[in-house]
Image (cartoon, rainbow, N blue to C red; front, side, top):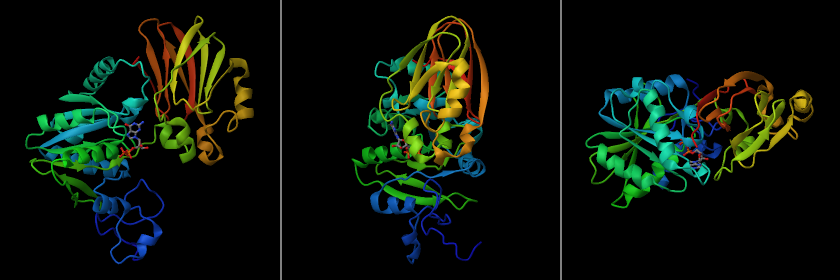
Amino acid sequence: MDPALKICTGCGAPLQTEHPERPGYTVASALEREHPVCRRCFRIKHYNEVAPVAIHDDEFIRIVSEISTKRALVVKVVDLFDFSGSWIDNLRRYIGNNPVLLVANKVDVLPKQTNLDKVEQWLRKEVEKKGVLPEGIALVSASKGHRVEQVKTFIERYANERDVYVIGTANVGKSTLINRLIQMFGETGNVELTTSRYPGTTLSTVQLAIPNYKHMIVDTPGILTTHRLSDLVCPNCLKQIVPDRAINPRVYQLNSGQTLFVGGLARFDFVSGERQPFVCYFANQLGIHRTKLENADALYERHIGGLLTPPCADCGDHLRDLATHKLKIKQGPNVDIVISGLGWISVRGHACEVHLRVPSGVDVSVRRAII
Ligand code: GDP
């Protein structure tokens, strides 16, 4: 190890000043202290507050697999705006047979008229297809504090003597949720936050000891992904694509031979089918441009990074390397064509062929319509 490398005296992570979302992040001035700590440990110590930290696959698997050896209640947090992108594949392999509560966060970004009972039924089917039968599902907004009470009630009902492990991919709102829970459980006394190291790793977990409860709440690092558009854009463009309030669906009546550009990040060509509506669910601040398919190549070349933004110059050229997904949608129930980390376009029951271009590596999927 580099002798100049300093270690966080709280959790043991090597300190660094470049990546706020990675373990050991701190401001440069803190490195001069005699007992330096990372931002995460600093916040725990001084504010009783959990800060997000995220790690790559191998490390994540090693840490989270520990759960399968424990008597645990697993709180799996997903992002409702990007359910499949925020799901962790092979979850059972990491958590064993432990019971699961599913917390679907960011309910505040769904359109106002959304039937949440229907969304819950849809979620239940989706997770069952993935081999998980949750004890309970809570649709919450951690940042607004909506329905978080239900998570507390579920924990009280199902934890018994199990410790509660909160897991999720990076940016699903896990830390925001845990901090809400700290406030709620804290009403009955002081919550004590401690860190303890996972065997075989430098990174520690954060454990919350709750007075009058037999169990701890354990925060785990989030897994970093690379298949969501939100993982790939620069911080400024991220603000353009992440919804910060309820999405207003935008409806486009298209003839075949027309194209929609979603910023410059997705190109949706309606190749064949009868004239029909396509309903777009993207952040309200993200521009959508309609053009003729025959003009689309030229428009892209001329306006990418300008009229068609994001991406911007800071995002890098990787977002201009587009992969084409050719999709044939049959007549039948409404479906959503989902672009991970960006949003979705809903097809309202009519047959059509569409070609969707998104940056290489970004997941595209088709699902039963959520709304
Ligand atoms: P973590 O990486 O899973 O711990 O996620 P964070 O708690 O750091 O949250 C990631 C981002 O999502 C932050 O910008 C939060 O402000 C935002 N966020 C968290 N909860 C919600 C929510 O309920 N609704 C919305 N719209 N945003 C949220």
